[in-house]
Length: 374
Image 1 (cartoon, rainbow, N blue to C red):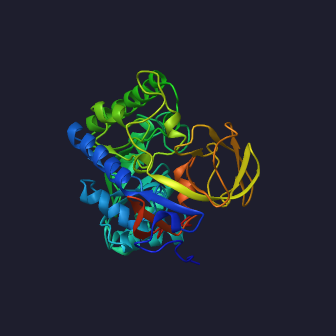
Image 2: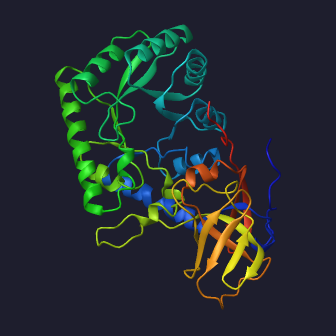
Image 3: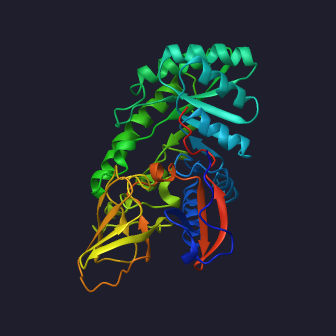
């Protein structure tokens, strides 16, 4: 059930009910422009990942800024995007099972939809469905470039699957999915770069092998917020799939830059807005935002603009703050902004973005694909 919005357009920020998911529009738009310019400057396509925001409004703004389309991980996410007006979607994941495949092919009859595969049986099932729907479905071979999650191994195994796709009645070989998810949060800059260099070599070798066998890779897609500069400069990838850049969560901010300092070129724009509901001691305050308001799988949130205040622990409905300066004024009813540890699952807890500018609510955007896991 969609919950009622915690705010109304035009109201001051301080009047927004909590917990609420805030989007700082100035920071969001700055991030949007920054990555679009970086992709254009490198001569690569930008296909941001919609699993981060789950919102067709944001997807369309990304495309208006130069993105060719978006990625999704689930058919239900892709449905939300296509029905929301997004015309180009890559499901950067494996879609298995007759019901999901049928829904995927139904979408492919309405918009440009592509999918990834790493299994011969799955390719056969996709081919049968595409033939039945009268659709020629673009399929990318997912290659394991170091994350050891999904993907066939580089070179010969990838060639075998690409040949099967190319020889299918209802499929079209569209290239390679080469995403190294495990590299995104390697803290050390040099080690993060080394991981992508190793992935680039595996991908390059596979592209060259495919070419020698008459299979050109239209797309070599991958990259994330933590590594995209390396992929963009590699000469291997021609499409970037970064997603978290528009929000920039607390975990990404722990990555080290080339100079050894933590931080990012992107500015935090996404916050969980919370209220102090208890102030039982000088060094302790409790917020109304706990485990049901934000994800802590990648660590606790940080408190924006308050270096001396630490979000120490989350329970179901409470967030415990430690005040390292007992003189800190943080009275009952005071509201704070929390930078989530992990933006993607935090977004999935909300129905609305409360979009703010200059401490006033400018818009309410529905998170249409919230809970889209099928």
